[in-house]
Length: 207
Image (tube, rainbow, N blue to C red; front, side, top):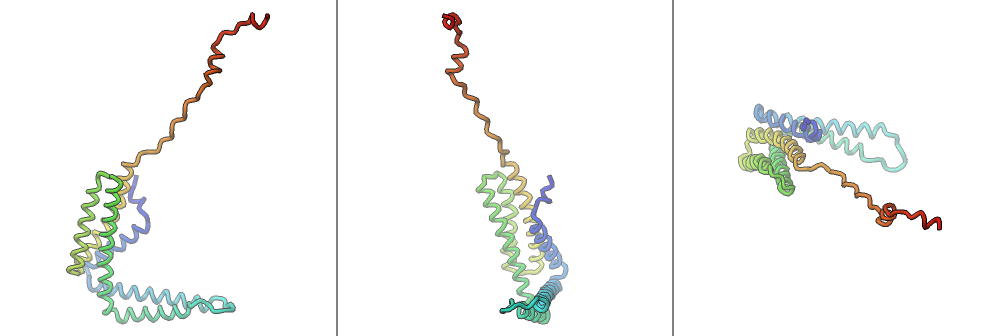
């Protein structure tokens, strides 16, 4: 069985994005933060344009329409501001990535505890990965090094995927197949059984 294919698509996408961002942080740490700010601003502008078009194209009904125009204009202005003033947001994006490493550590801590509660003997193997990512999360919060953040994001992505696969493997071992209960043996009527076995006196019927 290919356990990787059974991992949820959302987990695959999120871990892949984290691994790519971590790799970019290792290669171009400052440039990556700027690109992330620009992409975030562009996304806000795109959503704002869609909201504005929705307001302009929708059929006008009596009453107050939804605030699509106001929200669209706000998102467009916010996106332009994020792109123009990205130097003020670089530290914020770095903080967000640091918190993503912490989130991965918290996920692995819970998964390890779940394995302990489920009486899985191999829980300690999962716990080693959880301990490593917890140590990385602490180091990231202390030193705030972008290179360390990049390494931690890559390891966190690999650790989360490995955690899901590991849990599927070990839980598949401990879960026993459900067997159908055996059907109860048919109970025979003792009276009928004795009547069938008793000899029949034909002379008594003829007299």
